[in-house]
Length: 587
Image (cartoon, rainbow, N blue to C red; front, side, top):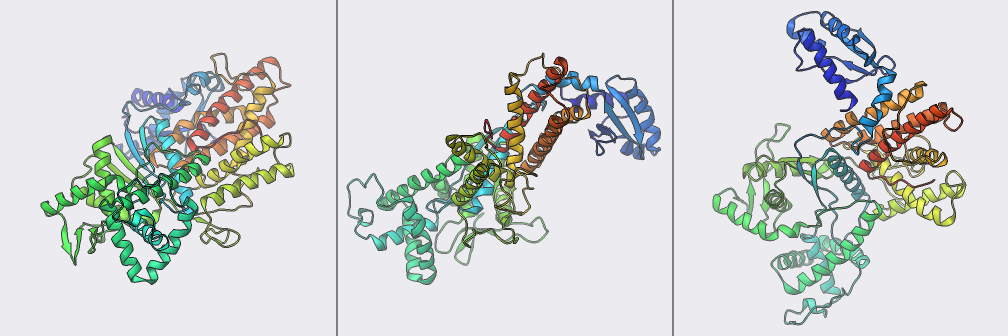
């Protein structure tokens, strides 16, 4: 049992012994660590209910707790806060039983939830750009946090692969290469196994086609018709579309692999095409779909702000199926296939209205009864001018640009001698990639999900302050301490801790606090909570390293401090994994 839960049990026992209800003991980490380790605030609401002075309730509870040698001191402060300081002996003795397991003291719930997590959302035939960083790294971290807690998570990249962009590409290729067999309706042979273009060609063609459609209505009409033909099974267009998918997915996977982001499913909007057609036919027959100026809609109720929600357009007047309809079919598929407790969408906060409409539509047609549908929005990445981030040359940065910028910055730190002084060229190349990517991810994850944040290339790989390299340095230092003194990183019952200095106590308390941070991060889908915890852990370890000599300490003290270092490393690595940060073996 972790430390906080042990304290909750002891406080509940004291409440009962004093004749008080234990339904709300309100035990948590102290707001004032200089005064106490934990506090119980349950006397205040209890006093209100009983119409008594809260101190008159808190004092006998505190007196009961003082009888337990678990506590070094227990005091009542303010209007009735019970402040508790744990004895050093208890803190040291708890280490192995609480911290050594894979969950580092976090106690998984008995009931395991199944979660479908939709994040990434790249579009086929388009280069991943700055807007794809946040859904990738935030979604990956939420996935890892949920799995740490014990949930079964199915991660789906949900490709944009079935709408108008596909028709635009087909139309542009048709104009440029009309003699390709894909455009010959009399062709009955096998289409080429290799595409007659590259993924880079597609990335160049799409913006040209998009601009052309805005200027030329005939071109736009052809693109819409080609989209319809593709979705209705045109043989040549389906072959072209398969080329689009294969080329794009290969490039997308390469970038995600560099970010250490992975998915269980690589499905796109196209995956539910047949199901969607059946759904629309069913909704027509039931009368749920309402004709409206040539389109077909589902009228909705009230928005969260109390205003009327705009109707969910399922089918446009030209027969094109809208994204809301695809999203509903995808919900139906996920419910049928995975029977999830929740479906989570890590998508830009600016899509909030769309998801409110989709979730309202799903409720109206009883699509996901008992399944929680959550839109986990996020803010934008801005430059130092607090405007949407652009490259130094003024362009919209690609994801490749962001990764390369971070890796180059890490390599420059090594060349300047600020880090990597003892690394050879091969090691610098390998480790600069790890450090650069981790710096890029931590710079994103340390910010609250819903807030915009400033991307500063110059501070990205700083080894000071709340940065990825600062975190990695601390963890590498933990490894180095153990390696240099010949200590194994494997935890055993022999790894006991005896507190002899304030920095040891502070570090150990930080390690015991992980379960509370994990629960908060999980409940709020908030990776920044783990990022903040890991930063504070790194700070506490660096203070411990500075104040508590290990190499020159006496044998017993050295053994204890090495054990504390092992526990710190174990917890730090668990946190880094939840954030998706890779750790180099040296820096």
